[in-house]
Length: 129
Image: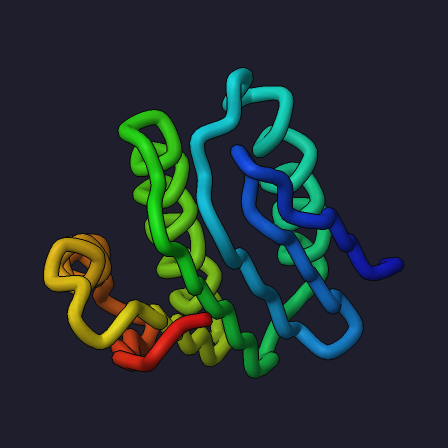
């Protein structure tokens, strides 16, 4: 599957999905006007790819500085889906990167991670530029 690359805008995050390497990145701000129009094809691409993946190492990185409640719902569903992918013999590592002094974003990542039973969650605090 070809990589999926979507440049960030003021309302949508950068999407950089390297399917061949099983490395995925969502970075920036997420408050699209039409959540389904933006995330529908992104999630669809993931579902198509992971339907054929077994016994693989998968790394999914989130580096978000802001997201709205509609995006939070998509992220929650994505975390659940990644956990299901991990339960099918894959090693899934989720990396949640947040600004070192952004307690709210840190807590959001930890809340998403609470329901994970199979995927590994790693929180990284950094100075984000």
